Each structure stands twice: as C-alpha cells, then as structure tokens.
Image 1 (cartoon, rainbow, N blue to C red):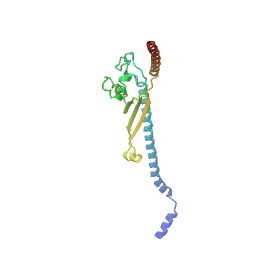
Image 2: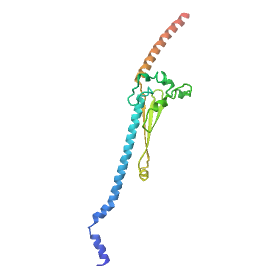
Image 3: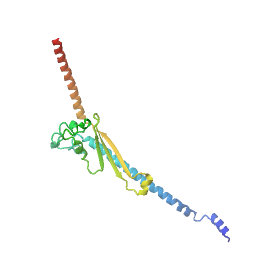
Image 4: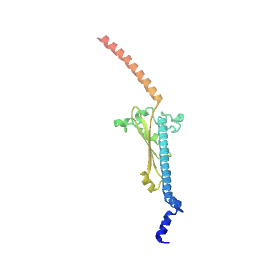
Length: 205
C-alpha cells in the first residue's frame, strides 16, 4: 500500500472524527463557560454593592436629624434628644455645613456634626458625603470593592474594581410643617404691624 493511498483512505475514514471535533470544541466551550461565570460574578458584585449603597444612603437620610439615632431604625433614647446629646437646638444652622457656604464654618463650635453623623456606619467600606443644597440636602454614599478575579480575567473585562454610588434626599416632614407654619405666622404678624405703622404715619400727617 502506497503512502498516497494511505492518506486517501485516512481522509475517507470517519472513525475518530467525533473525538477530534470534541477536542477542538471543548477548550472553546470551557472558555465561554468560564467567561460567563466571571461575568455573572461581576454583575453580582455590582448589584449587591449598589443595593448596599442605596440602603446606607436611605438609612442615613432617615436618621439624619439626630447624631445619636440608630441608623437602621432611627431610634434614640430620651436622654439622646438633640438638645441633650450635644447636637444643639439649632444644629441645622450651626452643625449642618450650612455656614461653610459663607466661609464661616470655623466660627461656631460643633460645625463638625456632619462627620459625627456619617461615622455611624460600621462594617462597610463606604465613603459618605453630605451636600447641603439649602432646599434639598442629600447624602451621597460611595462603595468601592476590589474584584477577586485573576489578573488575566480582569484584563479581559477591563475592570478590577466595582464602584457603586447612591444619593438620597434628606426630608423632614415635621420640620417642613413647622417652618411653613412659622413663615405663615410671621407674614401675618408683619402685615398686622405694617397696618399699625401705616395708621400711625397717617395720623401724623
């Protein structure tokens, strides 16, 4: 049997073709499966980090009116009221970074109350920032996590760290109602005094 005939017979022979094809396809399928698994891990880390950032921002905004309040429930004891725990009655003016906007942050003691409130979060590698936007102040939370992936896989995805950012406005319904009532009351009194002044001026004429 000549060498050429052996080659021709081998080309026509179908035995072992499945093994060869499987040997070629298996590494490709394995790589695809591993990529899918690593991609799922990245998505999982992103989703959990974003959820935690949202939960922390919401909890901080909910309990922002008292530096001694429990972050999860907002509870505080009777001896930890804002007038007793050092926050002060006018903490929204002196301890809420309000005076910093006018360059007067260092004048009034206790303006570092924001750091006392943001430090209540333990167990999370989170950065918490407070933005006093006058009308709608908000809390911003950033969480960064390093992905436990091989360097080669991290290079494929082009990412080695997951970052989640969430913000939540600080709403105080009781304070809004109180401020609104005070504004209405003050306006009525000003109008009343204005009428008395106008009558006094008219009499003088």
